[in-house]
Length: 342
Ligand SMILES: Cc1cc2nc3c(=O)[nH]c(=O)nc-3n(C[C@H](O)[C@H](O)[C@H](O)COP(=O)(O)O)c2cc1C
Image (cartoon, rainbow, N blue to C red):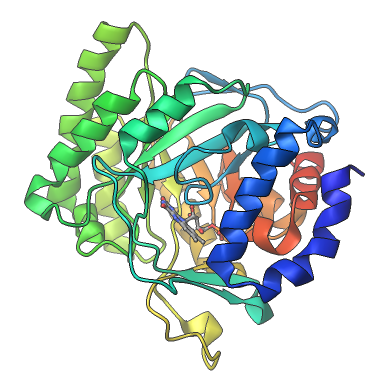
């Protein structure tokens, strides 16, 4: 057991007494400092894992950090050092924006869950890109992109194209986020017509950027768990027809059934952690059945332990990601998953 794994259980009660967002900001800062002091060094990958070849990339292992934990790309080397094989930074928008008023992040410990309505608080794509230019980690870095809150949906394509162009030279992959519940109208971009137009534009630009930069940066789309069968079929049809490089399933849910009666259940935002697992796995399975075989799915939503990650793989994921699990379990979760998912 390494220092950081040993310390987290001791720090957790203290962190959980802080407001959730303050605890998050503090933890990310501590990760950066601990990494600079060499305290994360020995955490690295456990046993004979990876590399995993996927979408033309070589992932050191199958575990990634989900988007939203490191919105500004400020700690990528530290996440790599604690064993993550990939880190998805963002969501990043063309211009910096403050996000929604606080409080906007809530813990529901009885359910091992979080509710957030952060609203894409981020320093803007340029700031993140300049940080990523200086990264040293061998972990694969995905850049998750979105639109500014004040860009109407009719202009959304331009925001995504802008971010794609700026991030392309430094990103290993790009995740197109059309599934956050906290930016008004964003999920409407999942409608068949809108998503077809968006992806067609992004795929055309990807081909041009490939020529310009001499490398292919895969384009993945991140989807919501709150899709009915018809919406899933329509999205899969577009993904197959447009040859998207991969799918990330899923984002947070707006459904509150699993947490009914909890004092915070009615807070607006996306619910993550254990309560989203089942729905997330069903959506993942459905996409796996409908998508072309060679199109990988990154499974995310409700992984709280190694067995959950194994279940996600069985449901059809090629890689898995975690966010809420890390809050509840700390860095020990990384080791546990890497030991069980090879
Ligand atoms: C506080 C918070 C912020 C998030 N921000 C983003 C984001 O900016 N972009 C995104 O695509 N997903 C974001 N997510 C969603 C996660 O990446 C993930 O899809 C979701 O939480 C389900 O995984 P989990 O159950 O392991 O947390 C966020 C989640 C949380 C809890």
